[in-house]
Length: 395
Image 1: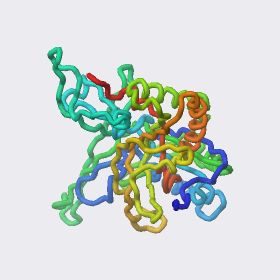
Image 2 (image 1 turned 90 degrees about the vertical axis):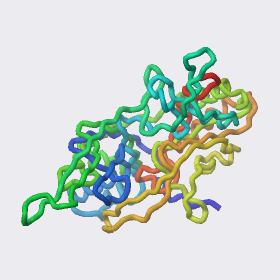
Image 3 (image 1 turned 180 degrees about the horizontal axis):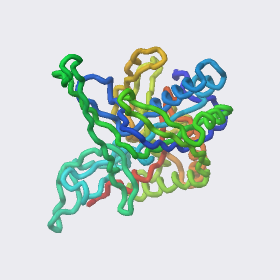
Image 4 (image 1 turned 90 degrees about the horizontal axis):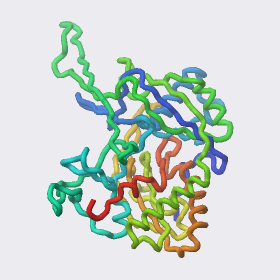
């Protein structure tokens, strides 16, 4: 028994994909959890659900109503899917990536997804050559957090600047700071550029273009009464990735995986990386943490899970329309990654690469899991980081 597919957009209608560019105009603070206490932290990206809510608020303020066909197409019929907006459009580090705890700049990070899929021992310490000919670093390997960018030397951490602002409550009679009312908040600074994607289908695409126009100023996050959360949004339509390029990405992934780990040579492989959190439910509508082949429409083709690196988060939120908090739910966190494989003879693989590319391209456009219209369930397949920085003997 499978859970009904409630998260997909309008079904099989073609989806237009827009690259969204968000420029921070005043400090932005997106709560990690319900805002309590005197010291608050912020997310390092703008979740799709926050941007979608800001667009809905802008529409209400302009049109003054929420029951017309345009509003329903944009926000109620799941024809528009608003993705997370990440710093400079970069991607989160996969949970399978590890860095040297002592020499994070000098010793290259490694990725362990293929190594785990090949059932090879995974050393908990850095194997980068040390001072002597037979010496190795030996420092602990630790997971990476944040976002990565491709460089000439491989992949490096995105240097994301944040700052902390403070304010205090003034006593109405004595006109001085009230005791115990000093608050600090970490914020994303002005002039930071974030990028992501928005998908729309049917007439909703035209409505979205009209709503945003050449540029739209919105307010996201907390602290709006103090001037925080002002951003500008621009959209640029992008063409889908050509089928040949998708096929090449899968072919390259398999070639490198088979070269690095010959034990994987009898299988057609692909990886699935979560670029945003995913809300996955089982048949009893309880949260689950594993991405299954059925989520990717690959169960009928014989693909099976081979490795996984994941973490979960408790997702909370605020229902602005109803005026009360949303129920908390467990989600699989961004950066979680999974490896799937299927035993197949060598002569059949080229056709399988092309077939698999078409299937996975549809999944990338539609997303997986629940509440996809809010940006949850954004995935990418066969990311180069899994094989270009795969752990090798003696590295």
